[in-house]
Amino acid sequence: MTSRNSIWKTEPFLLKPAGKDYLWGGTRLNDDFSKNIAMEPLAETWECSTHPDGPSIVASGQFKGETLTKVLKWHPEYLGTHPRTHGELPILIKLIDAKKDLSVQVHPDDDYARTYENGSLGKTEMWYVLDTVGDAKLVYGFRQDMDRDKLKKSIECGTVEKYLQKVRIKKDDVFYIEAGMVHAIGAGALIAEIQESSNLTYRLFDYNRVDKNGKRRELHIEKALDVANLKGSAEPRQPLRVLKYQTGCASELLCRCKYFQVERQLINTERCRKMADFETTGNSFHVLLCVGGCGTLFVENGSSINFFRGDCIFVPADSMALKLHGKAQMLNVSC
Image 1 (spheres, rainbow, N blue to C red):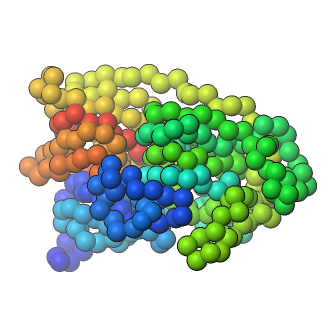
Image 2: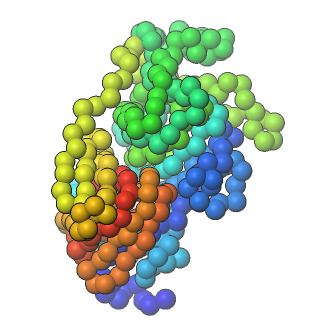
Image 3: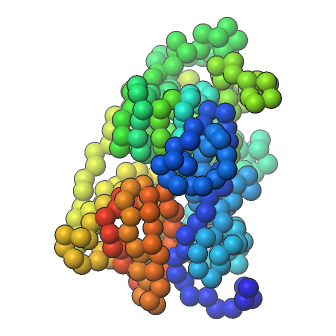
């Protein structure tokens, strides 16, 4: 490989994910998204990650075969000038296949994580529902106000489920899960998750399940009680979404918070026979996750990337001029 000190052209590249075989996973990430990862179950794929528990690998271009972590260490300018980046990738993007219910859990905020988890980030996240099977639900907070003693006793007695607010979900739903919100993805949900770059999960309840070694998974009740929002939650409503149109593309804002921004882009250049422009600035990188269809990303230097459902593309800040062609649905994530 040419020395990393060479001057590289700033152009996008494909990523290859890390896989996770958690006991609640299924086979859809291989079956529907052609991940070709030798795990069964395959519960999660970490599509864009520099987290040490599962970094992504560059799968195209001049850095092919290197971890995304290394590339961004060599070229921190790829992240942009947004204060949130601080020279490190601040987000993690996953695909999640919940064949079974996930544990009831909660994540700490940044302040708690910095203090008690060796300076880690907390974890606020957003879910975009790609598909559902059967009567899929999620847990979103509590049906009524709780207190620490009442919640702890309900966990010990195995009655905590009666206090949890369960919400039916359908394809194309969006949910914002702030740090401190008690939550769980239910069986039958296929989800794209955008979150802070953190792997901190405090389990409150895991249905008394055992892992492949016959052992119950660890619970983190005291830490969970420290950070959980114990107030009753209103049932979440879907945000107002407005499509904005330009040549060959329509886009809508799904979520904007201090950690990330997520837009859904609908690419259809077949009708207008003209490619859609994709613009970047020096402020932030972009990550394009194809969640439907296929297409091609053309770069002004003459190179191109063909992408299909499930592919993830990292676009450095202030990238060369780009154009999109095809019929596809993409999540566009930036900071």
